[in-house]
Image (tube, rainbow, N blue to C red; front, side, top):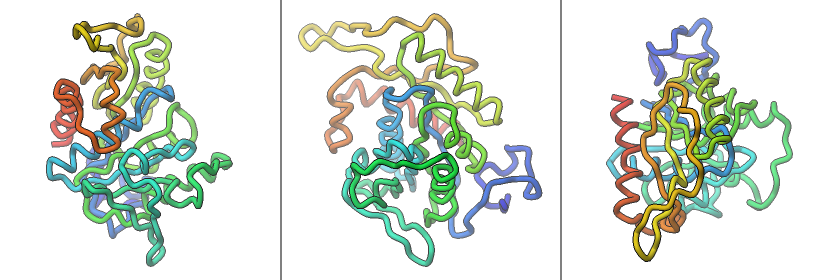
Length: 269
């Protein structure tokens, strides 16, 4: 069970060590755990997770990235460590460290072939997530970013109940149906007493390469997000995907991304 003295959620969750289901690894000293989630797949959640981890590391923080999207693991490629393998030492998972100093754990780092599908049922998926949390030697971290799977299913529930999240960032696109589904995720977080730090609106617009005019790609959501404000709006731009290959973001896009990490660091003070 939890040792509340070393838990990032100490004094915030309303539980004590007698009824808490969170297991804390005594080897790890993790100050903040930031979940990145969405109600819908394909909205750029993993890209936002990777940017947040890289940006926090470049600001001098000790950072880890846990890929809890077990069915669609992508952290290895996004963090520039595709093909590298995590390994076990003294019954603990040792993360791969990327060039930014970010410690990364993803299921693809444990498969012989990253194209191999994960054909597991819910119990095994949830067990894998709890192992990534409690059986990984993360060491001392200022921030552990958790790339959560889309939706409100088993793995998301396991993350919210078994990992002491400081708060979550919601990622969406400005489309009415997606907004409705993201509100389901926001309400799930509220139900489980997990604070929502804010919403990142991805693929919000395009900039004409000739005249610079802002082009709205999707129709705007008819309803606001449930008790959550928009941190920033990110455009559809090739430099966002190129960022994961080590290329620099365009200055204006980088400023928008920087609003995310500022909100996180302000929130976690």
